[in-house]
Length: 174
Image (cartoon, rainbow, N blue to C red):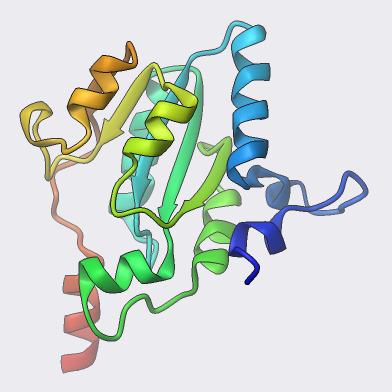
């Protein structure tokens, strides 16, 4: 079976620069290594991003404000279903990645199928793992792996006043 990121990765002759941000794990490792050689720092963010809303945009903008490059790890479809329940995701992972790739605050996107981003943290060793304000530094599930890899956890974005689940519930009720 082909992974959604494999279908999205484009060749150099592509006319869509945003699509070139969507990488498989091997290509992401290479891109991160190139950024580090250039002296850039790397911030990892992650989430479902099922229906993009202003809370997501503010979260990613705040991650960008930390400096360096921003990598967004997007939960695969099975992961979103496990986390959010029946009827989710509303958009397939490849489409969620494409929407995120269009944002200027995002430098790379990778789709992951594991329950969390611990393995990805070990692979790319981000300088910062940025999580939204629904977490504290102490409640970030991957915090120990981030520290083990030499990084730090940052809580970014505005208060958690926006939720895809809440939006979908309201839409379904109207």
